[in-house]
Length: 174
Image 1 (tube, rainbow, N blue to C red):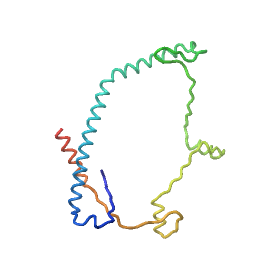
Image 2: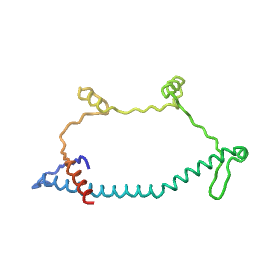
Image 3: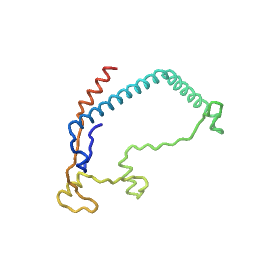
Image 4: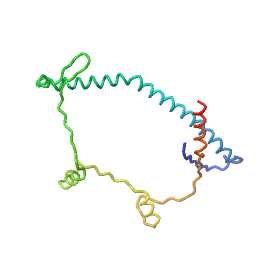
C-alpha cells in the first residue's frame, strides 16, 4: 500500500475519466487487499502460537537432555583424547577445537590495522550522500555523472485511515 505513483503521458487514454472515482476504486481495492492480508497474518500468528504450545515441552526436554549430554562429555574428556568424536545410530558427539575472536575495542583494532597496513582486516564502504549532493547541485556546482532533474510528477495516495478502518472492521467481524 502506501503511496502509489503513476505517470500518464497519453491524454487520449484518460479523456472523460473522473479522477475522484478512479481514486475511490483504487482505495477500495487497497482496502480489500489490506483486509485479506490482515486475516492471513492472524492465521499465521495463530499457527505460530499453536506450534509453540505444541512443541514447548519437547523443546524444553531437548534443552535439558542436551545439557546432560554436554555434562557427560565434559566429565569424560579423557575418553576423547585420541578419538574426538563418537558415532552412534542417532548421530555424533564429542569434543571439537573451537576458536573465537573477542574484540574489546573495535576502534583500537581498526587504528592498529590501518597503521600496520593490514587493509584486509578493515572494510571501508563508500556511499553517496544524496542530500549533500543535491545541495551542491542546487548551488550550481558541476558534478560529473550527476544532474539535478526537476519537473512535475503525477501522484496519488490512498487515505491511510480508509485502509486502517477496513482492517479494523474485518477484525471486528471475525
